[in-house]
Length: 283
Image (cartoon, rainbow, N blue to C red; front, side, top):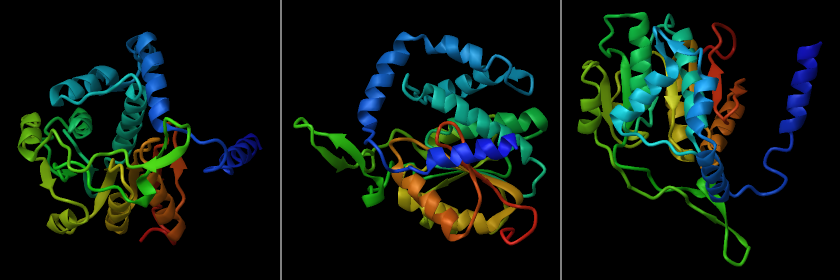
């Protein structure tokens, strides 16, 4: 009964999604950067993740090491989102280790998240060298934003206008750079190319876990259309969420509605679906 009441309250809270007052992402980012920077976020991380471990290592220490090794920046604005969503990802990753298939980080950037997953895999299998872990990225920046990807911006006159947030083709990564970060995992597969064309370079196989961090509508939708039919029963797809990525959220919603797929939304807009072991959505 309590669960039903909680679900009813949640449904009511989300029924107005997309309505109400406008959220201006750039203003939210500036505000939280100022506030969080003064609040000593490292102290909060120590409290929040004190008991979280990956094998014998503290999760927060391991993820920080992955960020530092790959030169991946976090800001006071997104630091809590990054740590929590990566812990969530590790938990789903470990929970699906017995599911047959490969694992993919789609939108790998400099490889920090994939490196975290590689260490998580090794914490369970000491001989893991990277086999069946795929890093997929253009390594050439972000493609052009479409109409679904625009964010609201407040002009100097107070009027709202819709603009793209991500610059086209801006990058500070490369396949060679990322390969160097995985010297301890030489068998990882690094696949460079634009979505969806890059999918043609992948072997035809099953997938156990896929993490999407693609920011834009079209690549997110294309990735779902490629991976979900190939997802093993019991496997998981996770998609990052952000106030700067409305298009990715719209792509997820549209795909799941079209295919009548159930999923959950976690605390930082991250969405997760598990492929049922049997039944109408198993294939």
